[in-house]
Each structure stands twice: as C-alpha cells, then as structure tokens.
Length: 153
Image (tube, rainbow, N blue to C red; front, side):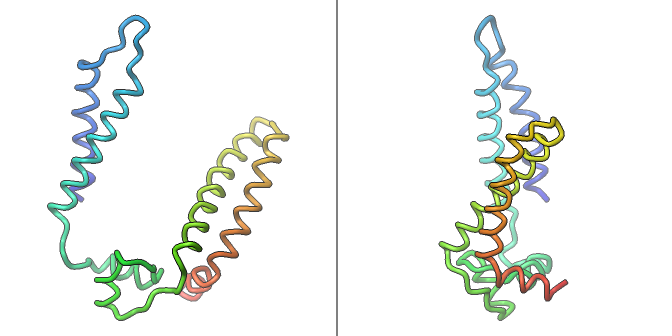
C-alpha cells in the first residue's frame, strides 16, 4: 500500500518540478528527459519504501497466490517452506521462452485489433501470424501451469 502511495506522490512532485527545471524553450523539447527522470526517481523512491515497509512474513494473499500458481524460483522459498507446496517443475529456459512468447502474444493481439479496427488487413495478417505462433509457444511451454490452473478453477 505504501509503495503505491509513495509512487503516486513522488510522480506528482517530481513531474511538476521537472516542468520548471527543464521547460520546453524554442526548439529544445525536454519531454523525454523529464519523463525518464520522473520514472527513475519514482522507481527508486517506490523500491526504498517497499523495502522499508514490507513485512518479513508472507501475507495470506501471497500464500494464496503461491498455492494457486505453485511458482518456481528462489524468491518464493519462504512461502514454499511455509506452505510445504512444491512448485511446478519448469526450468528457467522454459519460463523465459514462455514469458517472451506471452509478451509477443499480448502486444500482437492489442496492435492486431487496432489494425483490424482501421481495416489495415495486411498488417493485421502479420500480427495474426505472431498471435498464433506465440500462443502455440505459450501453450507448449506451460502445459503443467495451464493444467494446474484448470484444476484450481
């Protein structure tokens, strides 16, 4: 909770301060620099507040989340030890491939829908190929995760 509040407050303060520190004058357009400075500052403040205010014991929601997804990785060791639930065996390679394929799927779906709405069928066709291919990769690389999610629902 405090992370989100600190991020919102920091973004408002730094974003407005940057308008005075780097104003647009003549041909000098500082929008990208202001956004980058605001984003980096907000990220640093948010991470510091998260580390200061976070509990050392997992919350019930975190335990419930892990119990449903059975996530693999060292970061979940405390929760795994607490619950006694073993993760779904999936290697880092499969997880990385599935993650990249998921990102490609989501962005292609969003951009493909946009191209379909504007009736740019050729570009939509390219996106459709990426949608099908990345969806197939996700389905192939994550069968145990998909099966466990179907059992939980």
